[in-house]
Image 1 (tube, rainbow, N blue to C red):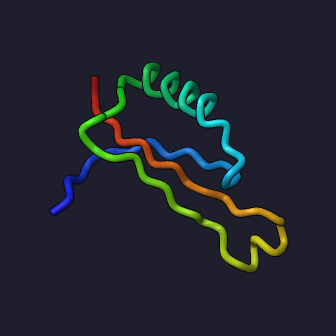
Image 2: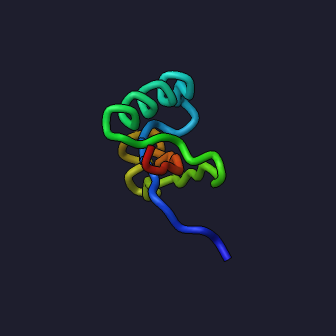
Length: 71
């Protein structure tokens, strides 16, 4: 059975994400808001673009879920 908890979510263009920049921005957001990464849980990702939206936009969007906890 999985463990629940809080996640910070960032959205970007799939396969075009500057992971280092995204991690820096997430860490800034977490620090300002009293959170930190929870390394006891896995990061997750999910493509959120429907096939029709991908056809219109020409790319897919992906949500990146970072497990977090209160400091």
